Length: 408
Ligand code: NAD
Image (tube, rainbow, N blue to C red; front, top):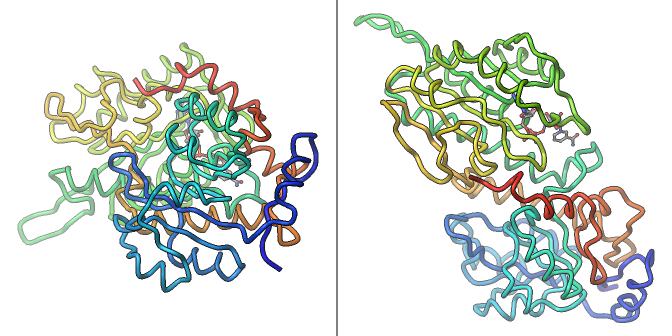
C-alpha cells in the first residue's frame, strides 16, 4: 500500500486534512538546496533517500542539493530519488519538506497547504517564517524543540550537530595555535602539552574534551551542572571545582543564572583562563542569550598566541569580544566566533542529520500514513504549527522574547 499523509484527528482542524489526504497518493518527500550563505549541509543524503524509497516514499531532490556536502545528483538517482532542476517544483510538490535551515517566506508561499516541514526552525529568530507557515496551514516541526528523552535520541539533531561542532572547534584552535597539542620529547628539548580549558560540558563540550585529549592536550573543564563531573573525568580531563551553587534546570539543561552568579563565576575563572593556551566555550541556556563567561580583561590576561573558540557565538557568545561569524585578534589573542561550525564538516554532519530526520519521519509514520499525534510527547514537543495555528508554547515564548536569544 502506498504511503499516505494522514493527521491524527485530535483536533477539529485535522478532520479536513484527513478528508483531503485519506485516499491520497504516494507521499512525496522534497529536499531543496540550502540557500543560507555558508550552509553546506543537505537534509537527506543518498543513503537516506534509498531508505525512504524503500519505504515507498517518493523522494524529489533539487539538483546539486548535496553537492557542497559531497553527494552528487547521480548518487541520489542511484538511490531511487528523482532529481529536479526547478526549486519551485520540488517545494510545490512536497508533502513533506526536509531541510536544515528554516524555509524562507518565499519558499513557504510555494508549499502546499497541509504539507509537513522538518528543519531547524529557530523560532526565536524566525518568528515571521513561523507565522507564515501557520497562515499557510503547514505542519512545521522544529528539531531544536524535540524533547531530549531517550526515546528521541536517534532523532536528536541538536546532539548530532553539537558533537561535530565540539570536535571541529578543537581542530580550529589547533590550526591557529602556534604550539603542539601533545607533549613532545625531542633531541632539541621537551615541549610541554597545550593547556585547554572547556567551559560548558554538554554534548559539544564533551566531544571537545575527547578530541583535545586524543591530540594530547592537558584539559580542564567546567559546567554549572555537577552531573557532568564524572563524564568529564572519564574523558581524562580535570573538572574545575568552583565555589558556586549548581544551576541544574529542567530536562538535563542548565537554568538561567543570575548576574551575581555569573560575575562570581568570571572572577573564579579568571586565573584558569589566563593559564590556558586554548579556551573552548560552549555554555548555553535554552531560549536565552549565552552567558558571558570570558570578559575583555580576561582575554587581555591571556598569553599572546592563545586561542578562544566560541561555539556559543550564534547565541551571542560566551566571550564578550566574540564577533559572530568572524575571527578577530585582540592583543595577540585570537577570538574565533565562526558560526555554523557543523556545516564545516558537511559530509558527516549531513549523514547524521539525514538519519535524525528519517528517524523522525518514521516515527510520524503509522499504518502506512503520516500521523500528527499530539498525544505523543515527541510530536507535540517538536511540532510548532499545525492546522493554521502556532501550537507550541515553547516556540511562542521564544518568538515573544527574541532579544534574549538573538546574537549580538
Ligand atoms: P546546551 O547546548 O544547552 O548547553 C551546553 C552546556 O553549557 C550545558 O552542559 C550547560 O549546563 C552548560 N552551561 C550553561 N551555563 C553555563 C555556565 N554559566 N558555565 C558553564 N557551563 C554552563 O546543552 P546540550 O549540550 O545540548 O545538552 C545538555 C544536556 O542535555 C546533556 O549533557 C544531557 O544531560 C542532556 N541531553 C539529553 C539527551 C537525551 O537524553 N536524549 C540528549 C542530549 C542532551
